[in-house]
Image (tube, rainbow over all chains, first blue to last red; front, side):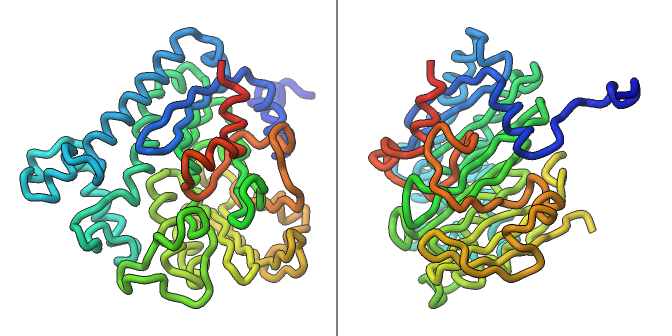
Amino acid sequence: MSDAAAALPRLPASDDDRVAAAAELPRRSFVAHHMAMPWSIHVRGAAARDSVTAARAREAFALVERLDHELSPFRADSALTAYRTGLLALDEAPESLRTVHRLAGIAREVTGGVFDAWGWRDGFDPTGLTKGWAIAAALDTLSDLVDAASDVAVVASGDLAVRSPSGLPWRVGIEDPRERGRLLGHVDVVDGGVATSGTAARGAHVVDARYDRPRSAVRVLSATVVAADIVDADVWATTAVALGDDAWVTVRRVPGTAGLVMTDDGLVHRWGLEPGSLRA
Amino acid sequence: MRYGTVTVTITVQGGQLTASTGSQSANDPHSQQIAGQAIPVLDQEAVSTGSASISLVSHATYTSEAYAQSLQQALDAAYQV
């Protein structure tokens, strides 16, 4: 090997080699239940062995708990409930509510009205993107671990975001919607978000807001979307399910996404980015 | 164009790949390499904890009871101190 080649970052050549190299890093996970779902934080690298990392994870979970308290549509004392019932004006609301309100407006616009937080009988409900945004916010609180060259991941019931200063990927399994515990495949993500939406787990709960019902004859069993931003991934995965059999055709055209859609006619559709597109 | 797109449609019946159309074959290693890390790769086998180097799992939201038996729960527990 020449001196010039030796000076380059030595990332292993193949995907499998990079995943194997990542598996050599020390790793630690932290688990908590918030927003009525399991959350986990994963740290890879030197910080996994650092005693202060547990405190950082607790802070991240505390943030999620606070966001749930502010944004839950189920809590009588949440800021969202106060806003929905007219007791709280948006400009007096906590920053979290103002932010998800703004993001919901963007989501409605970019999805052509399919993702519509205002399309619910009981008023504004941003829940479709609250989880994704809370994942991003939790990841942000761990940025000093990233600055110290450790990799971090935040997972909330099947949606996740990762940041990897090591340059090594997280191999993310994509679960078969027909059989829990079986994976359809995987996608390797260095920096970005992965969200999956489906009809299998909790019934047909995702509808196209323009039609108030799942529209097409072919049902999307699940849609997984990869994007640089977990909020985008979350919104487009939800939209893909709502769109029915149009889903992968529409969503795959969204710049900066990769994904996998399984429909109930036995088809698996997937699309991807060119290498490196997800890196900032 | 900043974002290239590779599209694939395959047919899976009973967990087996039975047909493939589109610009990339699911079994074409050259295409897999071009697509690199950013296209989902299909696995034709059941994966359990400790195999296939899976780090995290993406799935539709399910209940806490379902989580207790999930692959993600096993991965979370494996690295909890």
